[in-house]
Amino acid sequence: MDHSSPDAPVVRDDIHWPALIAAIASITAVGIAIGLGLPLLSVILEKRGISSSMIGLNSAMAGIAAMAAAPATTWLARRLGVVTTMVLAIVAAAASALGFYFAEALWMWFPLRIIFHGAITILFVLSEFWINTAAPPSRRGLVLGIYATVLSLGFAAGPLIFSIVGSEGILPFAIGAGIILLAAIPVLMARKENPVIGSSATDLPFMRYVFLVPTATAAVFVFGAVESGGLSLFPIYANRTGFTESQGALLLTMIGLGNVLFQIPIGMIADRIGDRRRLLSLFAIIGLVGSLALPFLIHNWMLTAIILLFWGGSVAGLYTVGLAHLGDKLHGSDLASANAAFVFCYALGMLVGPQTIGVAMDVTGHHGFAWALAFFFALYVVLTLFRLVLSPKRA
Image 1 (cartoon, rainbow, N blue to C red):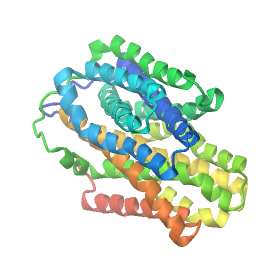
Image 2 (image 1 turned 180 degrees about the vertical axis):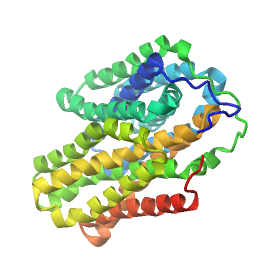
Image 3 (image 1 turned 90 degrees about the horizontal axis):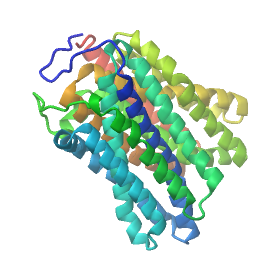
Image 4 (image 1 turned 30 degrees about the vertical axis):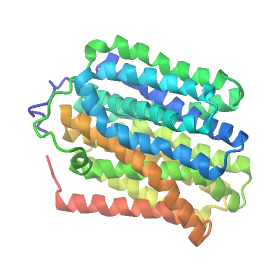
């Protein structure tokens, strides 16, 4: 592959460990902050007697903030530097996390949500950009597999912390803010590895990056839609098909376990495959088959658990391999902008997924959950096969 572009960094074959640790610390903070923050804030609003629709509206600020912050991230990082921008985002996220405890009026939670999720999105984009520049091309899949595993563990650790500390008092907010602030230490320690975002030779408008590497951005859109929609509505689906709340929760844990277990092996396989779009297509096909099989096997807990374990790994593989595919195609400023487009598509998926799946369940009954998931995977299978046929060996 030709790595020479006007904005390309010098390609090294070693892993940049300080940069890797800084990016992983940031993404751990992102995972825990989202995993702890989303259930905590919803529970507190419900205790205050706020209606479900208003809680939903307040939660939707997360997607809106992410979609607004993603395009602005490259512009900010180019002017302030990646490390400075990340540290400012860490401080803003920690301050707004603590701010929820002191904000009594509901209207105050709307700007706080925008600041919190906007800052978290900036961290998300820049840690992904940094890790893609820190990863040598020959080991990019492995490095991104480690990164995605840590993100999955962060998402799992958030609800676990919430289940232990509960929603009373300042403690859960202080823990959340403290964890976010801790991420600043490795980021500052790695400041000498600060990746430079120069001006791009192409300097395309933001939305062009969404379509520049469509196999990658569509992969993360499907991942966002399926992950957020699945996590939100699977407990309802499990309950309606005869499982108890605890059985449904265990099945949900199998998806998370698949996320964690398969990312590093998937990354290592991706390093050995020339055209990663084939792997992305395979994951989408596994997701499609698993979704279509769900209504027929859902009444058997063990079979459902096995399906969800592999299904969870395949879904998360779309994220890991999609990100590696992006890093293969672009460098420097183009990669930073494309990472922003990647996170934008993830946020878009998070907005579209739960809505589509919820409507499908209302219209076609509880198995609408599986049909809607199959719909997202089928769209992606068509796209990847079309791209593979259209451009079988793009450099």
